[in-house]
Length: 339
Image 1 (cartoon, rainbow, N blue to C red):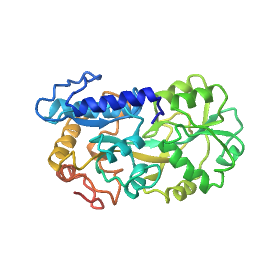
Image 2 (image 1 turned 90 degrees about the vertical axis):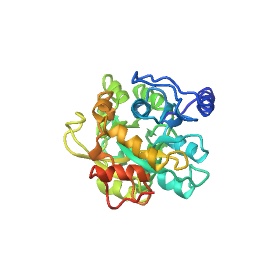
Image 3 (image 1 turned 45 degrees about the horizontal axis):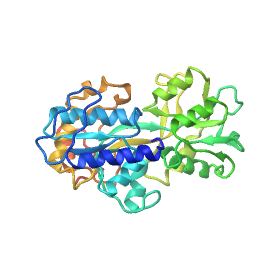
C-alpha cells in the first residue's frame, strides 16, 4: 500500500516485462520455487511493497501454489491493492491481492480507476482494520476532537484514504482537519516525531502488524472512539466497507470490544488468465497446505478454509473452479455467484 519512487516503478515494470518473457523469480521464502517449464508464461501475482504485510501474504500463497502444483508463477512487488486492480485492467497481472473497497469502483470505472475492470474472486485472506490512532497523552478521544489537527491515513491512493474519506465526510469533519499523506513508513515516522496528530492503524484481523508493534515500543498509543453507527453509515457508499470488532485478546491497548472501519483482503484474478481448472488447483493447493502457510507469519492466520469465503463480496463473481472446491469443502455461500 506504500507510495513509491519512479525508480521503484520502473523496476516493477521491468520485472513484469521479464515475467512476460517467461522468467520466474526465485522464492525469497525458501519454499521451493522451480523453473516454469510446464507452461508458456508464468502467472504474475501482484503483491505490495517489498517487506510489507501484503507482500508477505502473496509471496507465501504464490510460492505454495508454485511448489505443489503444475501452475507456475511468481509474485511481483507493486504499490499495493489499488495499483494491482489497475494492472488487472491493463492485463499486466494475472492474480493479485486486492481489497474489498476496490471492487465497486473498479466495476463501475470510477476513481481512482480510469476504466471498468472485471476480475473474479478466488479467496479472502485477511481483514484490514483502519482505526484512527493518537498519542495516549494527546487529550484526544473522539473523531470530533481532530478538528484543526494533522491527520494522515497513509498513501493518498491507498485503501485507508478511501475509507477515511467516507468516514470523515459522514462525520462532517472532512474539511475541518489538516490532511497529510505519505508512505506508511513516512507517516509513522512523522507521527513519532510529533509532526502528525492522528494516524491509521495497520491491523490484520484485529492484530497489530509489524510496523504498529515497532511504533508501540517508543510511543504509547490510544485508539479514538468511533461509533459503529457512523462506520455503518460510511459503509453505505462502498459494498466492501464494514464494521469489525477489535478485542483485547488480539490488541492489548484496547480494554473492550471496539468497532473499527474495515475491509477484507481478496485474492483476485483476471478471468482471461486464470481458468476455472486453474482456480480449482490454486485454492486446493492453498487450503490443503494451510497449516504450513500459517507458520510463515501471523499475518497469514486467516488462511483457513472455513474463512475462505466469509469476506468475499456479494454481487461479484467467484472463479468457477474455486467455487467447486468450496462446495466440496462445505464452505460455499449461497449468496455468492460463480463463473
